[in-house]
Picture (tube, rainbow, N blue to C red):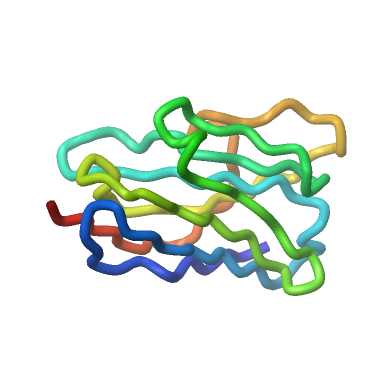
Length: 126
């Protein structure tokens, strides 16, 4: 599967954005999808993941009350709804895929994922 992320932009603190990750070239429902982000000068870090079942999600602590990950397998798309954005959320956001079984644990490291989309830039101003 190939992935393409979109939806980034320049917003003010407290605003919302929705990122999209569209898959192509594979059976999208076979893949768990993760969102990661990388701020300038920092390592890429886990944000959220969704397994093959739409209700099976996992979040990094700093975003779990503000961000929501969801998927629409018919549209081969995973969304990351980001609310109450903070300046610390500024980063290049990447989506990534890994083929898993339905009951697989969530992948939270870069090494857990085999396929990556290009990043989409989110800039949050104060």
